[in-house]
Image (cartoon, rainbow, N blue to C red):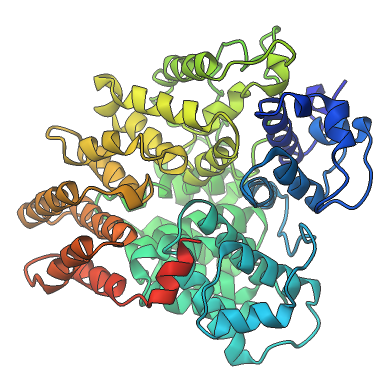
Length: 562
């Protein structure tokens, strides 16, 4: 029996990587490679330089043994998948679910170009792909004690990496984000990288500050903790503050704050009383998480509602369906939640069981399982499906979607999300529509963009749903943006902000500028950004963001797409 079928055993990241590899092989296009022995016999070669047995592959795919990174790379090669699709996803999931800081990982294959060549490419303003960043940082982390770079070079390297990351999406973004995480734990690079993150988040990249500050969660250097707490007590912007709140889930679980600094964190959360804003969506989950983790601060965090007991984790919605659950009703795989997992949304649990059943049913009917493949082996576990939509913590949903996005289930899952958004009960209920749109940001493609565009300008849609739809425009096939639609959306959101300059209307307009920046590969869309920059009557932050997008150097813009 696989360790994944035994209660309470096996790390969550290993279970997920095992499922990722197994699903891609068993649902892959080559029928011969679906057979374990045939696949094992073909494994030697490419990035993997030794023979493997069918039993070794079986142990990898059932989570009984950890899979080497070069073996994950070999799966990509044998299955004809995009380079880094499985490797980057597996690294990302493993880092996020790790019980402590991940300082480095083994390289996923041969070095390729000399480290010095990659370094010169990065600092000289040449084109850099996500794969080149991955190999460069792998090389730097293999030699952590060697003084390879002067201080100014570290700073330039970090600045360029972050500048590209905030303008990338999909796999190019993931490769850069993981490279940044590794540099944040490089013993020589870390102070310069933290400083670069702080400077960019409070300056040129302010509108993208959430992901920059949030990246500090995996760094235990005191400077990272200081920056996160500074953004909580005196935020440079609301996006930066949201990033700091999100970073605190892992930083508190990893004990990155000494007692006096933890008290500062509690004080900042207690004293912060902003107007209603979509950028404050992670405050309540963090209070609940921290109250459960450190009960001595519960009353300060939760106020009179505190009952003196730990917050319950809540029940996971149960989803029936052939590929999604075992015959005995248990999940096909045991998914171990991250230690910073928080309760499900209060008052919304009634929406989720039926919604998840419909999503599961749609996926079941559109990803057929062959006669030779057991549904229990390759189906989406019910708890993973729930993780993509239900938890209030954005990162939990995001990393679950990353996993699904790297499997043959991606298209069917995205289609199911769009089908749900077509239901009035879902699109008019922010508690359901916002997570659906957030998930679509990760798994959607050009076929799904019209649904997002329609919601972004549709009258009568709740403001949080409009905001989530506009935010998704920069991610769901942004390069397929329709100019007329974006002009209409700009006019609409500018008018909304002028009528009522609320936090939500401002955040929506800022997200629309981001969508224009991500799509500004044509002169027409660049003209729209130029108009926003010149409009003295519009939101100052939107003008500033438009100016920043227009000033992006050509080599950074081109590199971010690779």
